[in-house]
Length: 275
Image 1: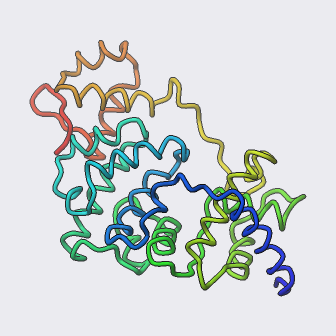
Image 2: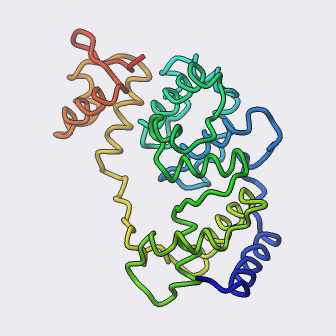
């Protein structure tokens, strides 16, 4: 249990950094009074899963130009959605995001649910993402953990410890939260965590849950992306795809997985983007 003085000291460190160095260029933090702010939060949280902030900013702005509302996303063709997503990787997130928009339009009158239990039932939204969406969209004090937050709490409370579990962090996050303004408090934590990564190093490797991301170059993920880009241009046969991917032996497995995830489908002898 943290002492009151410990909480105050920790909060002041985080707020002081935020006052001096807050990232004002993040578009999903802007226009919090806009009727579509919750949707903007949803899009940003899905895009930021396993993707660096600097890669997301331009894509987010382009996305919001194309699909400014839940309704516009729900009613778009999937090839439009996938084309807009191209370059972010983990393309199944584009499918999840559109499916979520369709459910929200049909079952929630185009609004973001305020309950974690409802959000986690939607495609591609886990417990942490659901809580983050609610915190940012509605300024409600829920606990969630992601890499930057782990970085801050391990740095301050477990400086010489390895294999730190999230269970050890949960109560510290809850005790130190600014419950009057949790949205901005989490923004401050995220910005401070980003700073620590750059200035101190990869502190999150001391987390029990740390996993080093595999290389993209030459990976099956890269092959998946190449296939989808080819099919966005035009439909192709297996032979076409084999020639375009230099007869990569993983191609047929990749095609099977893309079909299973409803990103592509086979019509006759040709593969096309799933609609």
